[in-house]
Length: 296
Image (tube, rainbow, N blue to C red; front, side):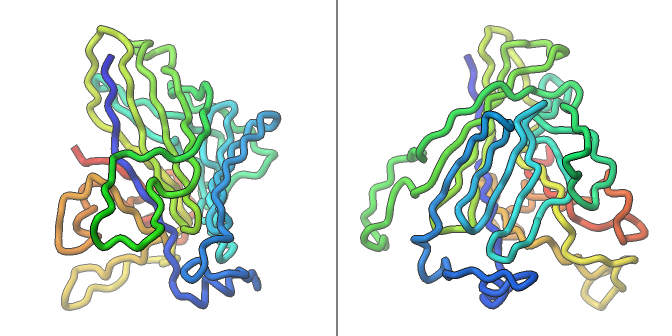
């Protein structure tokens, strides 16, 4: 049996300012500032077996998934401001095995990727996708032994406090190896607007496989700005960079650099979404699709 794990991804919901975190959209007001006191914000994982839903929530951020007819993230919210971060449904991951690309989870049937579909929309499992089978919930376990000997405040918890949930997926009928399974792991933490995610591909047979490529996170995010055309050129650059959605991503596939943006450039990609036909950008050039995976 071969088990291969692909990258740990940390999604940090950043804030434009302290004022926006305390007084958000439509008069929404957060009672406590997590930077000063994170104790009220306790991570929870709720599994509604009747409605086939899973919710990860710590009072600062909330990620909600439908589990039938397949598993897919259908809401991602910044509870500090009342902002909905998601506008579309994508697979939970993508793996290319022996040259064939497979979605892991995902739902299709959304007609307009400007906003999330309502309950009246009939969503179906993405064709030829790995299908959700079951989940396991528990506490966070340490990934490594950490000897706290230097520059560590007293009382720092290791592993960090929070919840861990694993979604298990089985292969579609057209997969050549029916013994390959995929796990999608999520961790949500106490007191931080932070969610971590990674995938694990297991080959439970003697038949060899090649994992050519992977995408461990795939989010259709609301664009940070609505520009009809590309911004005009300036002296320093041919085109002024777009504003990106208010999510900061870190991964252990960072390659080292002088700043975080450059270090993550090989694995963290803000791309165009070809399914987003109704965006304001005439050229459909809004960078509002988050893809985390190596360009290989």
